[in-house]
Image (cartoon, rainbow, N blue to C red; front, side):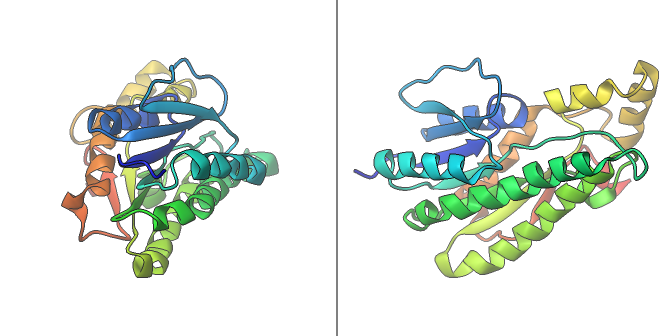
Length: 244
């Protein structure tokens, strides 16, 4: 039986933006399917469940798709939140680091959309929201592979939106600035505290880094009927970094 409730699938939902996004959809009456890769301290309940998958692996997506087909039949919203970030410039980025970013940030998003599309087609007013980065618009020092991979997400979003208009599926993206997540914590380790604080102040005119919930709110808006005339867009959620 097809779920009467709207259903959202969120990748990378064990922490950060993905976790906050899962909460806002849950609070608004959705059935929530979450994926994670390594550690997950969240518990399954009636309306939210967690599945361990590697988003870069076809087989993992095949298995999850079979489960969704059996239990839910449809997906109303897909949120591609899973992603990775390593520091590195042209000289310090290895081929392995380069592939790591492209596989997770680009191929992982592609596979999620490919395997979940049949379920999105079965829903009404369905949508996809991808998580890019403000670094894919503005660029960033010492994050060459990360910025490049997230730039690909923006092009992917716009092109997929054009392809899926015939199915009445909207596709948009958000481009977060610095957000208090485990990914930002890993970046923080690359700098002295003084340099980190200086860069955050200079980069964000609003005067602080963002909170995961502030990005999750925009993701939820893009999935809602309030954004029914929006597709193919990337929306900065960046404390003003994109206007500096």
